Image (tube, rainbow, N blue to C red; front, side, top):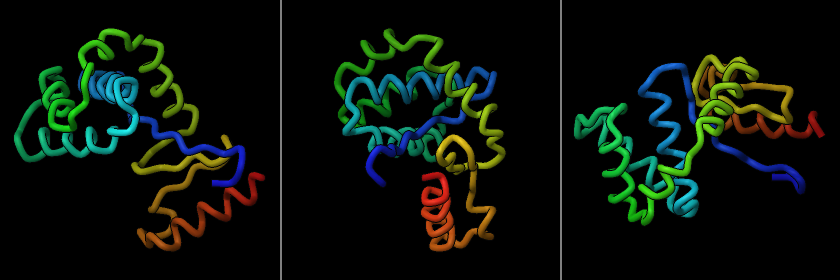
Length: 135
């Protein structure tokens, strides 16, 4: 990333119980141990897609945190405010995200792999070009 730029992952949050709980879990894991967030996301995917756990069940997320070896997840869970979750929903609306993954670049442009017909290399070249344009 160019100096002064950052990459921020924002969970897709809709006004539905399951995505609100998932976003809260993501923010709790990030707060508890940011270095293990990708392990947490992978563990959550496994619990939901392969083990059949429910996305709207807090036990799913506690299990994912345990699998990712995140300590103090439950304590962090209690500290996540509704405003943190609400902001991820507001970002989704503001950027008019219609597909995942989506990249919002410079607060002005939103691109998805759909813009490059799924061509991964072209997608990343487009992202780099949009960052350059935004600078």
